[in-house]
Image 1 (cartoon, rainbow, N blue to C red):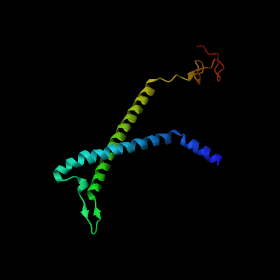
Image 2 (image 1 turned 90 degrees about the vertical axis):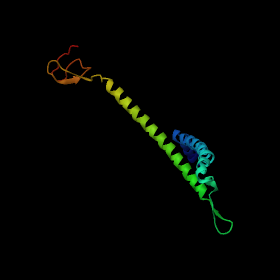
Image 3 (image 1 turned 180 degrees about the horizontal axis):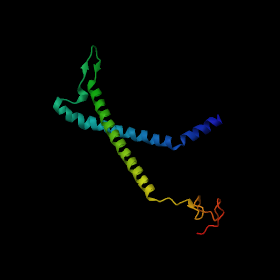
Image 4 (image 1 turned 60 degrees about the horizontal axis):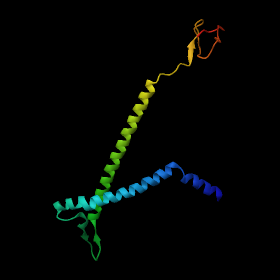
Length: 143
């Protein structure tokens, strides 16, 4: 049981889990804003053309049951707005990652690599830059 609790503690303290939790909380709050946008602003504006708010569109079924297809249309509008916003956010983040990769590549190209080898002036073989004597011809190297 103690091992299980330790594993759970390690799992819950990972950065990914905390990031996901924050994302879910912000997403739920953002959904409330989009719901309000659709219910309080978009539906009344669209209701001008249709004569009434989408939430008022119902189909009476036998008995007391009703089919609230207006609420379904509102949910579709909510989904499309959320999908559009998420698409824009992902597109923006991809563009930022692409820009960061270009900057990193440019910086990497600008920094010249320090040489790690040199050529022996006597036998012309490639040797370590720190060598003071050539391992091939045993000549003492001058700097």
